[in-house]
Length: 371
Image 1 (cartoon, rainbow, N blue to C red):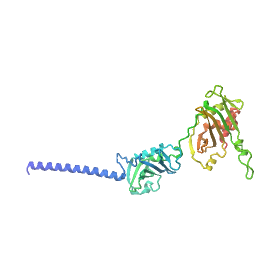
Image 2 (spheres, one colour; image 1 turned 90 degrees about the vertical axis):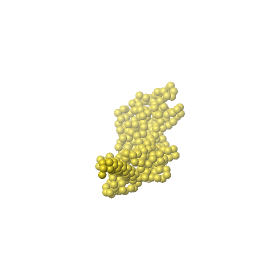
Image 3 (cartoon, helix red, strand yellow; image 1 turned 45 degrees about the horizontal axis):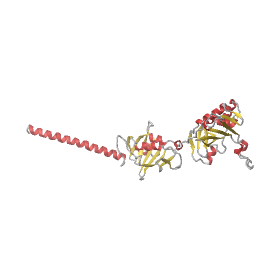
Image 4 (cartoon, helix red, strand yellow; image 1 turned 180 degrees about the vertical axis):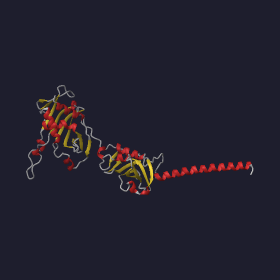
């Protein structure tokens, strides 16, 4: 074979090798893409380990079990999420929106074959489940097993496919742990600044002898509400509305009273700490002390030149002693109000305005411990 023939053969072999290498690269890419699509399902869109499980704009229903309760949400006519069990619940849907957005961009950290069985990953007894449903009825189902060794991730199964197990961050499960009442939009109280106030009435608890008669005895002639000790504070303004006022308890000028000033501050800064029970049962109301409230507050005030009234019923102390249960106006929802916001009110409900500062402090402690 001449050198020209050898050179031709060498060139042809190089070309064949290059073509073979190119084919290997192409087949490898095709295999990899096919493998990722198989792992992610038909709706998967592989991109740096990110699998789009649902489109946020297309998800119309979300239901999940968080290990303690099952919560279901649905989009209303205005495009806002509502709690399916109670559509009129004042839901702050920011957590639901965050769950859907997190779900839409969920990334796996690792993919494992389920060769060891569901028990090895805790998927036989799920710690949480989630179903996202689109408007056309198509659903994505996620099942979360136990946490990984570091506790920062979960084993997850997608759409009941037992052949593949994913490891994902704990972000979704943590969002799902928020109790429904912590998603409540708390009521915005009226502006009870002193310049708007006209009168404050505080009723104490019903005298113990009047709270109920022994079995077989007749009911008292007078209503228990009428027997509550009552303090009425009236604002008098010589220069018209919106001006500083002198406060009177009957004929007594109590403007300089530290207890009154504490009460005015509490009214001005008061806000609900959290929702405790929405549409409570009679039993729940009784447990929270609303069969015989420890105090009733009625505030007469002005708003935009019109007269208005704000009423708050104060129930029992909360078990952790962080505050008291309260109900507002005609709303039966039970809220929590911090102890700091109710101390002066409870002191006045027990001692009135005429006690000394020391007696007032002792009565305030008594008022917050009597149940």
